[in-house]
Image 1 (cartoon, one colour):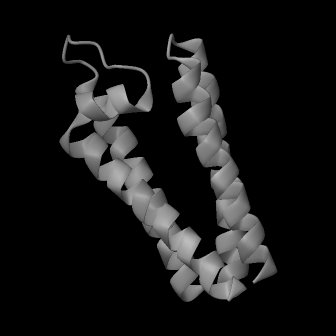
Image 2: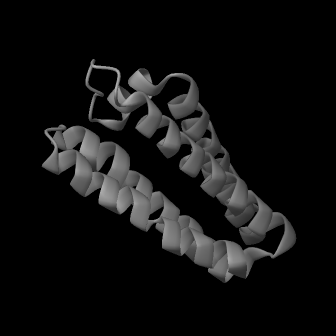
Length: 124
């Protein structure tokens, strides 16, 4: 049962990151607003938001590949390392005028869930 839960949570989190990446590529302004720091309306942010989308999407695909082809321990190490992303997102939102609710309620909470996922995968 632990293995199913560990893999299930990790798969859902990685699929969610793929979704976030696609959203940043297809709807960059809306995605930036959801992130907690709206894009400037001058149009210059679009390419940078697309880059964020590509990187986020590739992290999600890499996480899925590790789970499928390398197993729980590799997936756990990956989740442990990528937990840094939402932790730094928390700081980024706070430093750039975003709300504490978004910083802690979305980004910090995500980091905690990713760390829980890593712990479950290590235990599986």
